[in-house]
Length: 215
Image (cartoon, rainbow, N blue to C red; front, side):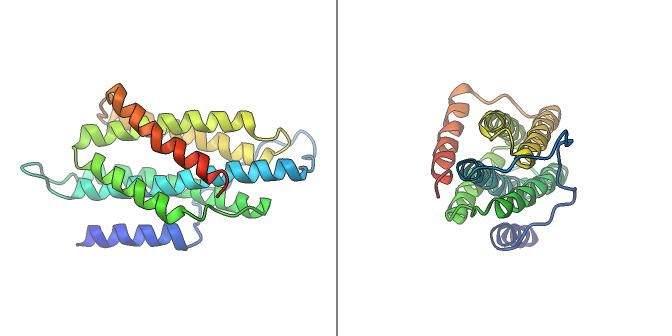
């Protein structure tokens, strides 16, 4: 019951409470004053950071669901508190990302996705399914998710306006953190998921990024 209540609390905090970061928002060294963004550049940065914010909403859902699944017994397999704590630790770092992207959206005058509750629910369901399939699959799901997110963030580094140093610094730090989460999950025993499963994971991600870019 405690695990279920914690999962519900995490959902409410993610969707309805302003997140607070435990780390300072990253910045790039300033070689010269940052140029003013044009209106078109501001709209592009806002749309890209909204997509990144949605990704962090989904990350909260995934890690919360997988930690919940790790604490629930399944058949003759006992709960794994150690796995749950590892997932929660990574989730806390993702909370930094959630706070940073929210702050940057505010600075750009952009709004979060109106569909965040839907994105959260879908990601929670996927995370719960992966978590119930055992530690190897759950950690393998983390590995593949973080690798796909890392590639997605690399693409955003190419698309963000050159003058938007603040957004670029945030995305660069997020990219480094996601790569580390993938390495940690692999070292903890994450299995390599079959290619068809990886492909299926990309499909909802493409839908999310396409829709969240606009809504």
